[in-house]
Length: 96
Image 1: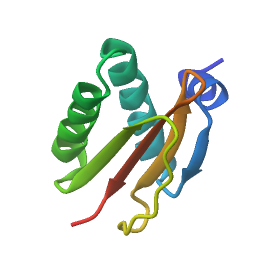
Image 2 (image 1 turned 30 degrees about the vertical axis):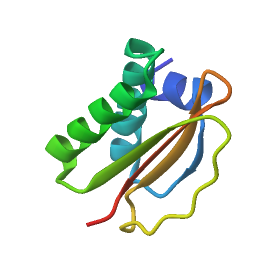
Image 3 (image 1 turned 30 degrees about the horizontal axis):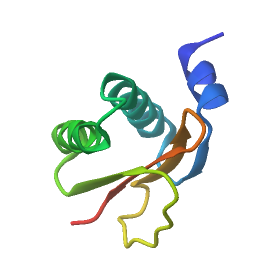
């Protein structure tokens, strides 16, 4: 089983319009940050934002938490909303 299949199976995105390669890279980054900074969502979000800015250009935004809704303006093909570990939601989007 390839890594992409494991990522999609274990952490299926709730909503995304990203191309597959970007989606997989973003999901891997989100999982890594949430595991590394399990007790500090703010630091995890900062790590994701800075990595996305470097890899895909500036103006990325990240929200990590539980029990939130969102409505955001974003650039087409630059939005990912996923859950990590059950109830922890991660929303990543680009808006410049």
